Image: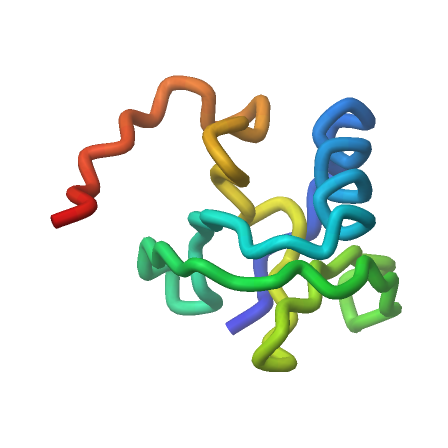
Length: 95
C-alpha cells in the first residue's frame, strides 16, 4: 500500500522528532497508517531510519512496538503538528 511517493518533511519538524527521541519519554503521536487510518497512540519514539524502496528513498519513525511510520504520514507529536497537517484539529478525548 506504499504506492504514494514519499514527500520529504520540513527540517524543523524533523528536529522536533529528533529532540523527542533524545528525551526518551512517552509521547502523544498521531499519524496515518499505510491504509490511511488516522491513529493516536502514546508511545516511545525510538529512532529515525531511511530506506530505499521501489519509489526511492523514504524516512521512517520507529516506535517502541517496532512499527515503522513514514515521516510524511506523521500528523502530530506532543501537540506539534507537521506543516502539511497544521489545519487538522485534535478532537480526541482524554476521558
